[in-house]
Length: 399
Image 1 (cartoon, rainbow, N blue to C red):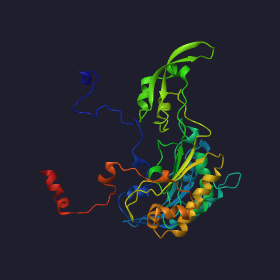
Image 2: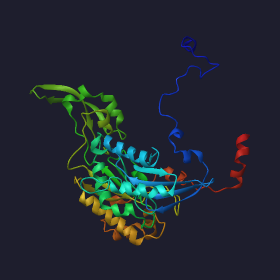
Image 3: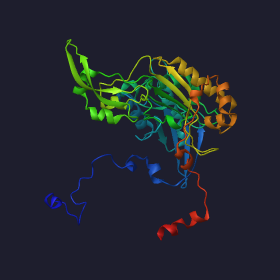
Image 4: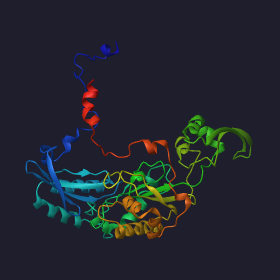
């Protein structure tokens, strides 16, 4: 009856239906040369750092100029990017998943004017607004999370350390002189809305102290069952407690108690309850992880492993963090073979040797001893071996 009363006709489901809700189809935003050759590309190559060429079966070519950009942008920056696209690319551009901006043109003659325009745009201090690079065997832009700008549970900032690290490694962004590509990521807490679990070098914000409990106001601000249920390790439990209020009166309140030994400092409880703050100036800092990747080349995909257990937050330039990452990258650059990722290099020389050549302190706390049954049983690679059974699979499925 609901369908009938609302005018819905099951025989003509699209009749009078509003279809312009939400984003438009992605094909509306493709440059004509890409739209005309969609799915019909023969090959591509990196002509120089930051410049790629894709060749279509039809003979058409697309030249892409990649430049680094900030993850969090102001309106003026976005307007300037759009102006560049209008001037050189008929208004078309794209953002990559690692916060790069790519300008695409259909002729090689248009590449040099575009590069010169991008290189001429600088901040008052002299640094490039849109540096060209981030391709091939080099460092591309750092993908990161919100940090102090927006998130409520960060153990470190995101934009600050990323800016400091990329300033330190800027030459590697503009060149392709590393053994292989190096992916660097940052997550400002271990909930990891960034990709630090599988990056060559990862920066992870880490809390070292359990949440504080604001007993007096907790019951007024929070739903205690939700705060208890939010803890993944069962470290939060409800409790009645007698306290002395701000006015000096003694009263019994409903609150929670945190088991400090069980707490893993994730901040989920604070997400549900603002009376359980986790941030601490001395306890918060960053961890450096290395060796992760998604690629199947040389070895299967692998998770990152902890290399530096803790570095305190040192805004605005995070000098110890930058020094440690630069040291790891230089050791990798000097010791790795061509096409070896950081994890492949470390496994070939041995992790003991990795700590030695990088000048890092080793502790038994850094030993990767996680061994869930799934570690041995799940397929950890997309490599596929065709067997007699796999060939027969379509027939088996049909039966």
